[in-house]
Length: 324
Image 1 (cartoon, helix red, strand yellow):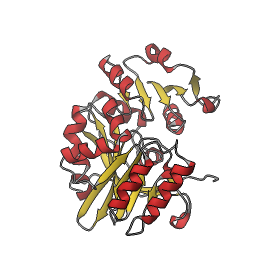
Image 2 (cartoon, helix red, strand yellow):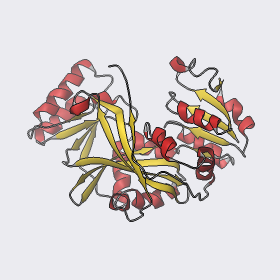
Image 3 (tube, one colour):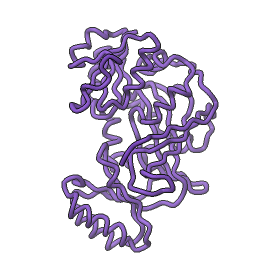
Image 4 (cartoon, one colour):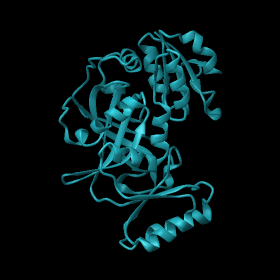
């Protein structure tokens, strides 16, 4: 099968290589200018993915590994191409936390109180009037180093962090979301959706977002992930979050992997955010846990078809090794 792989920043490079190893004919586009010289002689690198649409054809598969391409994915699907990755409405779900919160609520999923501010001083003013521990978050692909989980009951630590951002990182923190802190265990649930129905097993994941072990250092996208898969449709975490989003995902014709990160506290589940694209390093773990051919499965997702995915019933761990 011909596969056209559009990558923002090489996150999906290993996945593209695995698809090539399955004897698929893969062409790979890198959007990030500073990374365009990578993977030469490993993958077939192309300069303009749009010029390869006629090559991949409607019998092939087009893969997008990040948000930001949703509108083009929707357009290609309307033209009859097989596309997996996300959608325009899916992009908005991840880019705009307040919109995501409204979607959760409309699906009958309880949400944690949160506010969005375009000016940091307004966020400080709000916390001064609404004492308590708050969590500072960014939207979309903004640098997660600016995320901060407050600990003090009067919110003083969050206020000082925001003042520091205002002084040194004003441009980077143009939009700030603050969310009421919920005590509990952070855990995620994910599954692939084919535009009509859920497909494949349910994924449960635990992310390690601190730069160092022991909960030390600033927050990152992820430094490691623990994952396992289950076919239990009655799983409580799944039933109270993702399962309730089925109609919404069908309405936006979403075709790809969707993850909801949550805080679990006793019998209560609170969604924090949605990831409406391939997750990283989650997809690296899928590669290890899925026993069926990746190309076949992704093609079924893109074409809105059912697929009996075979997988390992084991635990899997991914670790990011990096230098600060």
